Length: 378
Image 1: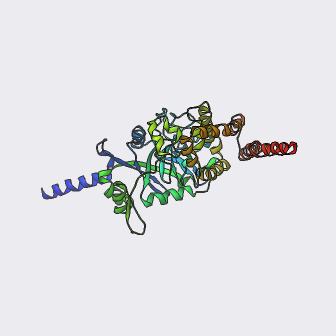
Image 2: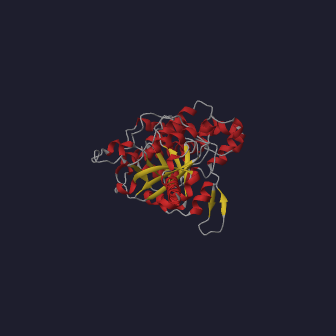
Image 3: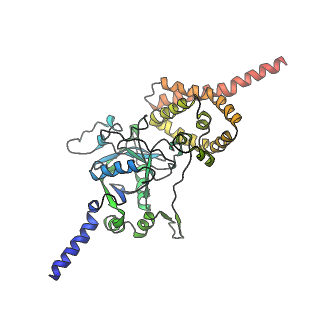
């Protein structure tokens, strides 16, 4: 009898550690993505994106992500996965990479845009031009990419130093056409599993060797210094962008910041044009390596001064109107890209340089010529 009881206890403990999905569906869970490059542990933001979190967990528990790839890898930007078209199998050994990035679960979910910034380690849903077109594809931010804020549904973040090391390994993979890793074996998600928080410490430590303290502190939203000097509370950086303001109380404008262009256009006839340019950026410019590199550098420069100007626009309506009038030629010139058929890096560079030169002519050359003519007449 004694040995029988010991056996039952041992089996119970084993089951607790090895079968995490057997727990209550209502219990908070983490997700582990197992790859050749290491593991990625995801913690969710259930308050900010409850439907997106539930959809992701359902796909994980169904085995949907098993065998899929991180098919789009852009160093210093993000890694993207979750497309069933990339699933490796014996029946699908000669995969058509031209379809990678277009697959989904056969349905879409409503966007849950929120104020969490797209900082390093953030997990967000990929989508097409329509806001409510996300399904299964997601991306993990490699380096801060705040130009994405408010336009994609942030629903989680990776935790533990182990996860960030894995993120760096995948982001540093060499890539070819369309940012596809040359060694796809390093980018395969072999298995995705959900783990109840109540057993996360023994499970992650026993299965993957993650230090207990890293898991314990991450679960209670603490961030500890690698040198052991101390821990601080984790709070995701949040912002108020103009595209979010339509869905939050107008009093949130007092929090400030944001995009000066969107702030100037908000509530005016220019607002649809700004939204179109966002979609053009996401679906055209960011689909090329040169376009992504340009946008990364441009946004670092742009957001160094944009929030200050946006705040002043909210305080002074005359200044806001002046900014809007000043930006009209710029937005009109950028809209010309919708008529361009961009299929290569060289075309992206050609059209981009052309638009830049056009704006230099409008904002600098033309006024200089006009001033010179006026001075001559005087």
